Amino acid sequence: MKKLSLALSVIFLLFGSLVHAGDDHSHDHAVIAIEDAYLRSGGSGKTGASFMTIVNHGDTDDRLIDVSTEVAKKAELHTHIEDANGMMMMRPVEDGFEIPAGGEHHLMRGGDHVMLMGLTVPLEQGDLVTFVLTFEKAGEVTVVVPVDQNRKPGVAHSH
Ligand SMILES: [Cu+2]
Image (cartoon, rainbow, N blue to C red):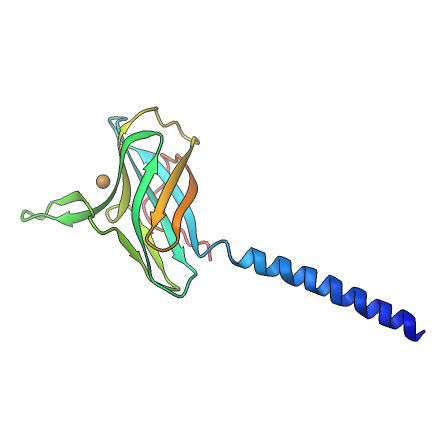
């Protein structure tokens, strides 16, 4: 009986360490998470804009500094500013968007966004477009973004 319980506890130890190793692995892949991303094409069909929530689960601030995609000749990080006449205008952002440690940053209509210029393919409702987002610390993060022309402005909270 003593031998059996010893054998059982060895099995438990083995099993326990395997489960633990799996846990560790699943924790180290997503410091940066992209939530609720979508893409819309502009009226001309030549430009597009993408919006999303970028979550930083890490304990250091990070910064989105670049974006690329195959569906456009040029992809830029844009924001909106008000000009002297009170008109909202888009302009490229030189140093990107800060994503604070343990926080999030919203790309949304009328604010920060990913701008696509010179679309190389027409964007159809429901199409899935791959973006590569480059972060200062987290490096490249690939995200698949659906085209959603019907999406209303505003932020959907998933948590
Ligand atoms: Cu723009």
